[in-house]
Image 1 (cartoon, helix red, strand yellow):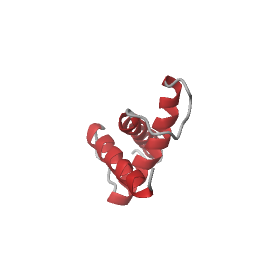
Image 2: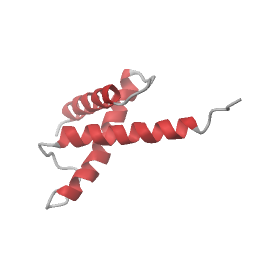
Image 3: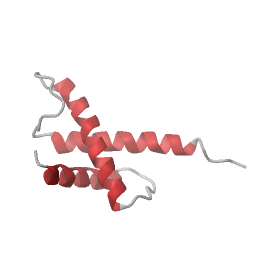
Image 4: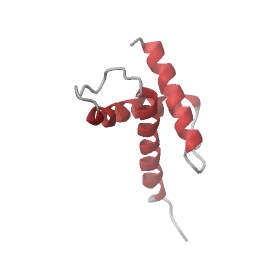
Length: 89
């Protein structure tokens, strides 16, 4: 897969994940793209459990779905990490 296609799929996955997650995620376009790319890796890892050959980085028809799921998992983890740093009075 080319780098441009990888970036476009990452951007789409990041945008979809941010749209589906409740709450306010204050991220720019670059952070959203990086979230989607990282979500693609996480989603590929999750998707490899359901695939018989177990390859992580191969392109699958359900790749965008697992990329969005992976990006949502990362958003959830970042939300939990950011919540513990706030001082509550």
